[in-house]
Length: 521
Ligand SMILES: CC(=O)N[C@H]1[C@@H](OP(=O)(O)OP(=O)(O)OC[C@H]2O[C@@H](n3ccc(=O)[nH]c3=O)[C@H](O)[C@@H]2O)O[C@H](CO)[C@@H](O)[C@@H]1O[C@H](C)C(=O)N[C@@H](C)C(=O)N[C@H](CCC(=O)O)C(=O)O
Ligand SMILES: Nc1ncnc2c1ncn2[C@@H]1O[C@H](COP(=O)(O)OP(=O)(O)OP(=O)(O)O)[C@@H](O)[C@H]1O
Ligand SMILES: N[C@H](CCC[C@H](N)C(=O)O)C(=O)O
Image (tube, rainbow, N blue to C red; front, side):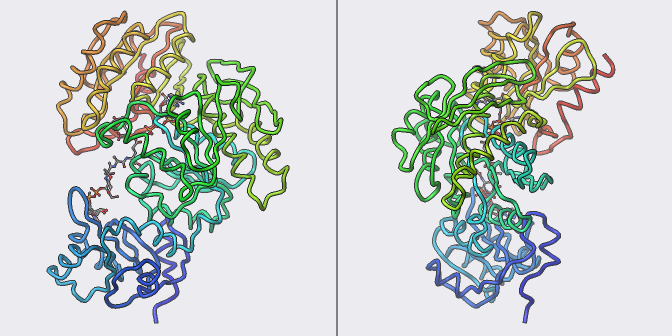
């Protein structure tokens, strides 16, 4: 008989629980209404043939580039004991000589994948205080602020998002902003084993449409804002809003925290089908508010007002009023996550007060208004602004912080929404004194043509503009012309450590390049 679980294999993967109780295909077929062929005892799930561990159920899904069934031979070779697929996948498996591989068959396997993965890993999300954050801007900032403040205040916390995953303060590499459902439930399983109390995670609109958070009910879902983004994936802004609004339904979250400074937030607060608490910087009627806001170049302090007369001081390690808003969202969501029926009534107040104090000791968020300081007489900031609203927010925050020049290095990514390019150019040329248009991740597009589209937007602005395609040379140029008191902002890539050109990712880290340029300044 096979062992209850393959602890050795799972231990090698920090993204999975070390132990899972095996589930039979017959049990899964019965619970999820699937056809079954053969039997097997399953101890894990994955939809990537490259990440199969022995004992896994390999989910062979139809995709835009290939049918996962074409990778099933590799998955079986790596130790998958069974395959979950659709009828077309089952036929393909037979043609590949895998007619004896145990199978679960259902039309649209993605639809059961989340709940099935949760079941295989023992529904670990039920044992975590879960915060899910959606919005066009600020997801990484808000989730990382929540996690680092919880950790700093002595709570075991986890975070999942664009910069990767952290469990109990340790980095675990994940690539998507919101992992696929099997990976997500595996991560939750590991978090529970590591005695994690709370997890803050980013929920992208792609994830909601593709069912990546299926099988999860968040204790609290947060809506930050909705701006122009992903019009390459969602057909209209209305579709994009609908994708995000889906998080605020009873099957996905128990309570919503919604930013009513944002136009779409106000609409969501009115339309959502779960209880909603509002937060705002500019609306006195909100349930969560910030007053006495003092903005400084290295952060901000403010007083938080919550429901029931709750009031306490908070300090954010990040500049900008939009980061006061992100911090308020983080604090409100922590309060709700620690207010379950099983908690003592005062518990959440105590947690949020201690977390608000701990926030100031936090180290900020990688690549978000991150300063690179080598003792130079001017300021250099690396920021992940790669969408119009983010460019407006980041430059709008930095503009008043200098009476000297604001110098911006900016480009736009290839194979993504093209409409945003001139808008980002326009904002830069309006708010900065000097703009250097350069390459971001050209991906498979012609880099010069992307730069041209950004440059087209700069023509009506007041800034002087130059074009330097090579990103390293552009950063070096910005540093070389900076004078005491200036602010240089390198926008677009933030925490990224590579530049993708024609399918190849070359090592490239804006922060390292800035450091090297400063060293030879
Ligand atoms: C549009 C989109 O999200 N596509 C995702 C989707 O691709 P797909 O369904 O077309 O799959 P496919 O590439 O045809 O492959 C078919 C199947 O074969 C499997 N396969 C493929 C190759 C292999 O060697 N072995 C293997 O098993 C794949 O896992 C997949 O199940 O499923 C794949 C498997 O998980 C993802 O890698 C892929 O993400 C692509 C790479 C991606 O870039 N997604 C981005 C746009 C995304 O999701 N971004 C959001 C954040 C956006 C933001 O707010 O900035 C995110 O949450 O990360
Ligand atoms: N609340 C906000 N409003 C407007 N702009 C913001 C806000 N928060 C952050 N930004 C800007 O957006 C950039 C990206 O922030 P962050 O990574 O936190 O957002 P995100 O939603 O995770 O983005 P992405 O989906 O691209 O990963 C920041 O570097 C900053 O320039
Ligand atoms: N998750 C985003 C990141 C964009 C980062 C930016 N540097 C770019 O390449 O456009 C995307 O894949 O669209």
